[in-house]
Length: 324
Length: 211
Image (tube, rainbow over all chains, first blue to last red; front, side, top):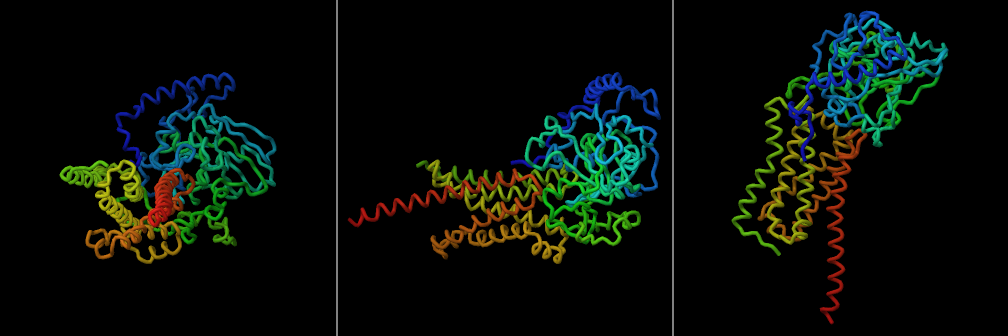
């Protein structure tokens, strides 16, 4: 029995980037042609001659810096894209990168429903024009006790919420991942209740730190990291950052969230990073920074993942031990 | 019954001894060539853990195998395989003690008391110790075959604790730990069935002998 790691695949066997990009560009180009004929909303505001949709690995332009970015050194692109949980593809953290290579991210639309003035469906390329793209270098803390520093590219979720125009009575926002068992093999297995769902309280969702990510390291978001659209809430454990989103709904009641349904005593709705509330199976007091030396001790985990100044007030008066 | 000539048996033992070091060699080669991926400690922990369970199951497979293929001398490999289970189990434990907890005794005691998968894992490792300490021919003589055999049935509990440790630590996907569990049940089931058959047979033969 051998442990499977990305390194077990000789690099010679991996499709050269140029080859799969051209393959993808052909496919997405064909899809784009169809979409352009049908909808015609294809011109991006910042580069109007861009008629081919972006594929993973393509450079994003017009990205601005953000005051919310961490000054810590970002984790390498290789480590970010080769070590993560994406249970729709595999429960092994080393496998999703290879397995998600051919995942189709175009055409892609986002349904908006629930407590909104008017239900609608937004095309991914119109979503990309909702707000200027920003680089957000965020600490990323997994509930399993490891962490990274990730240079996401995205825009505040609040921009989408404004476009969605929810009713004032909406108190929560719910997200849903695509259900595509033909492309996501684990969705054919009974690993979690598919599709993956997540949710936020409205004030959390409107917080300026909360973003929808569409890129990484100035490139179009790699499929393995949740392309074409994923949620990032940097003060919460990573699993709150739902990937490959196809639907958002607004509600006045707390929506179900996948891991909470799976194990309610282990994963709460809030799941704020909190070193004083242990997970039943892991201490949350420390974390292993990916990319650090084998013999480097773990580092202490910070309350709200180091974003206390910005977000602690959202939870004032709440017992965070009960509302973990 | 097949009999393996002594010189061949001895060289085979050397081959098996070296083969069993393979998983460690692979890990060390990867560690020195920066091939352990984004989280080397995680890879080392999981690899040594799985090899511990694998060696426990291989050790438990020796008895059924030697009976099925009728090569009794296969028992000569059993001690070495069992010691390798402890060897990889100790590497697994050391990875936790050193690379995960950095010898923080308080944190480890907290873990053992609070986290049931750690409790199960520690139990599995501790149950292997008396077996390794009494693995010599001298111990069998001193304890007597019957008592030695009874003591060494602790391996059933060690392997079961190991499987439970694995089941309890995974978040959602039980495929791998349950595969180990199924193999363990098969190996223990074989023993239950074969000892039941022996008991029935001896009951049948006793009156016949006395008549």
